[in-house]
Each structure stands twice: as C-alpha cells, then as structure tokens.
Amino acid sequence: MPFVQHENKIVYEEEGVVLAEVDFPAVDEKTVDICHTFVDPSLRGKGIAGELMARAVAALRETGRKALPTCPYAEHWFDEHPECGDVLCEDAQ
Image (cartoon, rainbow, N blue to C red):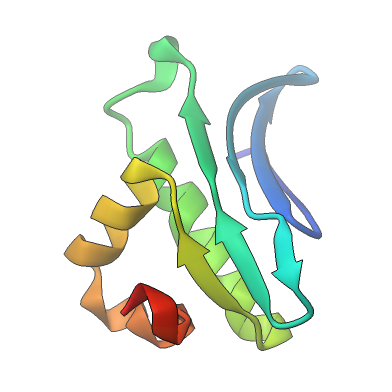
C-alpha cells in the first residue's frame, strides 16, 4: 500500500492524492500528540486507519518518543491495542 512516512505524519497516497493520514506533531523532544486521523470515505472500513496507527506506533518506537493521543480515534485505537501501550506517555495511561 502506498504509505509515506514523514517525521510527524504518515499518509496514504494514491496517484499523489492524500486519501488518509495520521498527524502526530511534537509536544516536546520526547512526546508527540496524535491529534488527527483522517480516512477518505472511499477507503473507510478497509483497515487503513488502523494501519496508519500501527505505523505511527512503529515510528515512535524507532525514535524512542511517547504519544499523547488526543484524537478520539487514536484514543479508542489504543484502548483496543493494549500491546501498544508502551508508547503512551504517563499522562495518557
């Protein structure tokens, strides 16, 4: 799948058009805020948002950063994936 990772964002693109994304801007050097997820209606129900979150978790693990999820989808996703709780900052646990 055409996922593109940036420092604080992962997008899903088709033919140069962003159809899904997860944004996680830095709060400080060690923490990001997972503040926004979006999936185009044409892709909903296909697991794209979950894949974006899994890739965001992998990126955070690679860089040693922690997450403070403020996006409702991200909050729910972490509730459903306790195995990824290691990337949550103390304020999010």
